[in-house]
Length: 129
Image (tube, rainbow, N blue to C red; front, side, top):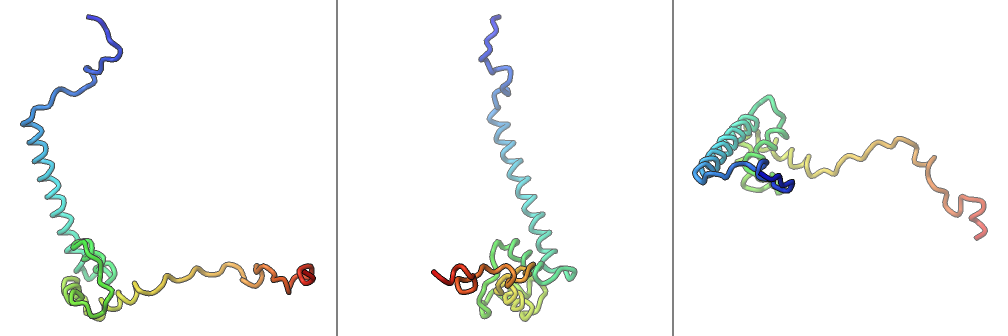
């Protein structure tokens, strides 16, 4: 038998049996559904656990339902979120307020006056321009 360096047949898997591929596909779908059900079960536990902060509970609710907490304080779903997370409506409103606040600025590491660029009036050579 002649040897062909371009022949890939020894490295290829055997031809697939159509029945096997359908079985593999169905098994993969069943496995994915079971994983999704387990993920949802863990999210339901996390969203109502008193060990978690309101922010963590609400994020768990958002992941479970693939929704974002509404920004409007009068939105009708807020009472649903409060009930599902075992929080009060005021705690849900507080999380809304916290999320709407701008991010806290970073602390100034150096005095801003010491590093400021001099204006033309402050620099001796720039006055005579």
